Length: 255
Image (cartoon, rainbow, N blue to C red):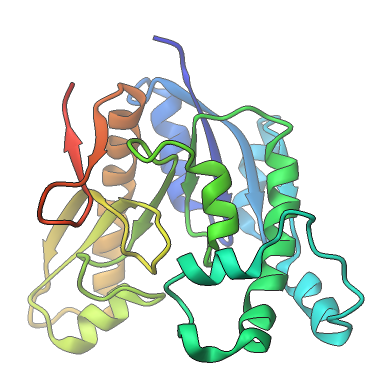
């Protein structure tokens, strides 16, 4: 079996990226990180791949978005950009929001995604892992990476036991709700926000005296174990997405 070629996108410290890199290094994953991209030029997690000679790139989302807001009619969009196609597939903005609002929301994101796709095209990859990448990906990007409906190629880890508490603050929402159990979820990425087929989950007890910091610490320690295990399942060809008669897509594990 050849090594799985893994691309990664990060926004911050890259602790989950480090966990996957460690698992590749010690043989828990038969794979290797082939590039790392970020939306944040200051992302701490870029230091390790740079030091190990792994290709790194940055697409400055904030700067691109600012330029688009200042001159929205003068910034050229990709030739294959179709607002109607994206609007029909996306699940993030109300469909009746109006064309102008939809364009303001999606156009700058697509500009950045095209830049990322161009950089990613320089290095062939089999799987893309989102390791603390804090940007929502649009159908424009997803359709150009997830080309096989039976085996998506974008994986994400979320700090909650989905489908509960989607969004950016899973541990905070879990803690604020008063849950007695917290956890994390690895899933494939689809058009919704944290709605893709679930690959694996891990849970931990929330004790009466636990603080939010305790919850986050417990969760991160589980993330660093769960994410490499799920990537390894992909590397060994054990994941397949199916849509049963009930409707929602699910992940089957096994040959």
